[in-house]
Length: 140
Image (cartoon, rainbow, N blue to C red; front, side, top):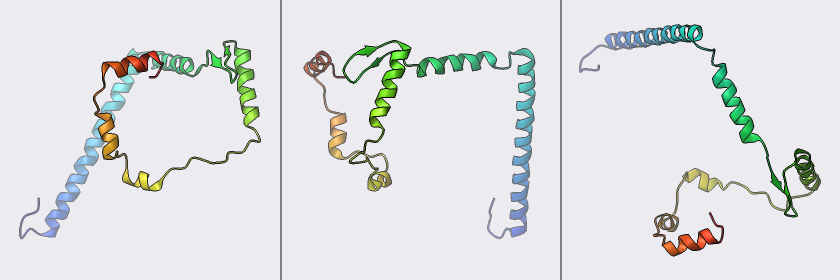
């Protein structure tokens, strides 16, 4: 705590004491975490149930159950899905993009911001008719 006329030695000592206190508080917190972890492992299942549930969830999320081909057919068989993916990438192989999308550095520098027109669109009143017309045409 800085006061008028206070010596730099006292300020330095206060800084060292504060750093020392923070160090010991961190050590105490670490010890308590380790003790609780040991007790939890003694009583619990080592987190394997949670791990396996998370793994099953990830596998289910990443699994492709069906695929629509480029000609509009729906494919559900694993072999057909595999063939369609391979064919898709074979068609890409050797092709050349005429234009690559790039990030506008000026937009990135400004951060996530909307102009007035975009802001107005976000708060624009939506009528029941617009909702009905969009839901009947398949827009989401």
